Image 1 (cartoon, helix red, strand yellow):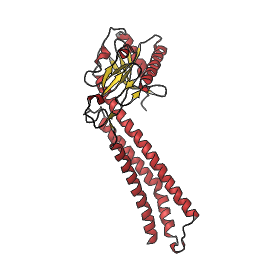
Image 2 (cartoon, helix red, strand yellow):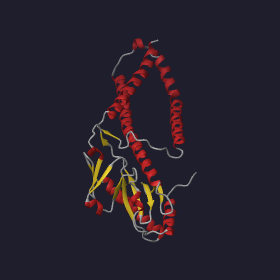
Image 3 (cartoon, rainbow, N blue to C red):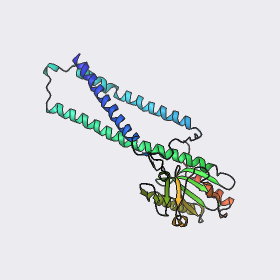
Image 4 (cartoon, helix red, strand yellow):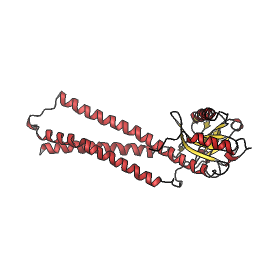
Amino acid sequence: MLSNLIFLSAFLLTAALMFACVAIAKLSRKRGNRRSPLHGKKIANLPGQQLMARINKHGDDMIADFMVMYLSLPIMLCAWAIARVDWTKFSFGIVEAAFLFAGLALFAYGLWSYIRNLKAYLRAKEGQVAEQVTGQSLNRLVGPRCSVAHDVPCEGFNIDHVVIAPRCVYAVETKSFRKPHGSDDNSHYKVAFDGTALRFPDFVDTKAVDQARRQAQWLARYLRESLGQEIPVVPAIALPGWCIERTDAARRSDVRVFTPMGRGAEFLLDGEEILDLPRRSLIAQAISQKYPNVD
């Protein structure tokens, strides 16, 4: 009876610590002072999005089933071993303390890894929603004068959106910077672009501008090598949910920053036609070659 209680208490204590730590981690994030720029907005589903959710759920269930199979015999072995311990002769010494410490260390490592992956998961989820909003806005531009490709694989990175417009090709990087929380001040929903940096209400970011330039340079080089001709590629940054303020320096910058909300992306069709239809078709074919084959 004592063996069963010890075996059960070990699982209950671990489960209680796990759920308590997870709840505290989620609560601390929920009470944070920042929120998604798309918080509270309705977003249309992509084709097959509900099916993808079901696929992910089945994948998670398969992982759980795999863990049950993997741990079934070790758990039963532990239960069998504990049931045969003579607890009247048990004493807590150095060896037992070492095993207890090792167990707590493993738990702490798991908790640290969980928090790290939870933050990465939530960032990725917000980024996916932002890309979805931008992609749906860009898709409205598709027609005889424009085509759009999404999530283009490159060399160790991806370009979120490539817009093949009459004037040039746009390499669009979508960003989801979280907004300050709990303020009705409209300034908390604006970002100023000065040509080199994005100046948010309480921080400044230059990495997004540098990233957009690098990706546009890579795409221009790829198209030049693929087509044997120079193709104008303009770096662009989409900030869904933000109001953009542009300085005079921003208007002279090679990087275009815009919000895809409403009609914010229609400027991509402006300008004289430099890329005629045959060249745009060749560009689209070259970009399509970067996508993987279906297994």
